[in-house]
Image (tube, rainbow, N blue to C red; front, top):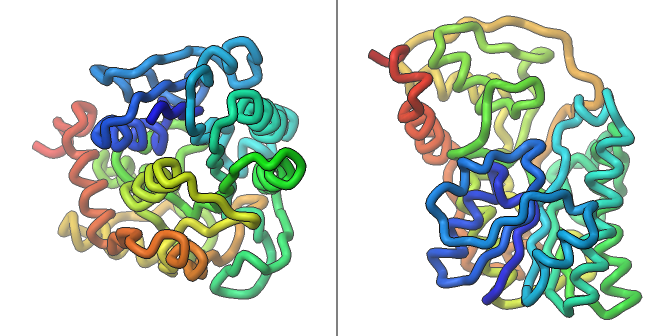
Length: 314
């Protein structure tokens, strides 16, 4: 297939591009490199468009000939959206509308990444797709807009769409070393540098950490089979891991105690998150589920191969 990946130079996108190429697909990527890295795609046989999805002409060029579009381009991070809600809105909400229009013009199947953050303060666990949404941050609102646009284009224009709610995806190529980095690369980075792990809150916040290989398998399969849904679909395996659990796993893998720097809770953070993956399994019966310890071990191993940590490990 000819598949366009928006945000393909990012963490999930660059892993997905590798899977699609291995499957024999022709791949185009559009990414403005505001959060992604061109080096993530070094050596790959793709058509790369360095541009924003808000650039209508560039998006049209990238989407030309695409049978499916997998829309991952976004400004991530709850704290980033609290600091600058308009930037998150433009990239995530308006950007998704632009991608929906491009998919409509080209007759492409459209898959997009929403987020578990849309559930917000809803107290029920595990999170089922029919629960009410209660966003706690501008980022969550933009992701609710993302999935809503896909469903609206499906209803209004008969566009084949599939919105996924991602839950704390982690794995190789997830960047550390910046202010909006996710918790797993932040903890691994600090641990390998011999620095205290920055822990926001009491560490009893729980997350449904989902290994990137599971996510990319589902995304690729959804494009190849043109899977659609008239409601958002949780993309996670139903894990419930606290940050204290994460720290304990890293300590066991590294064979040493890891010091902690206690910090205040972050504004907009959800206390607990866990997916009900029933709908996902009904649509993707063969979805590979990677145990948290296995995925974390693979992620830690990848980090130790990076040159910036080589001296620390000698």
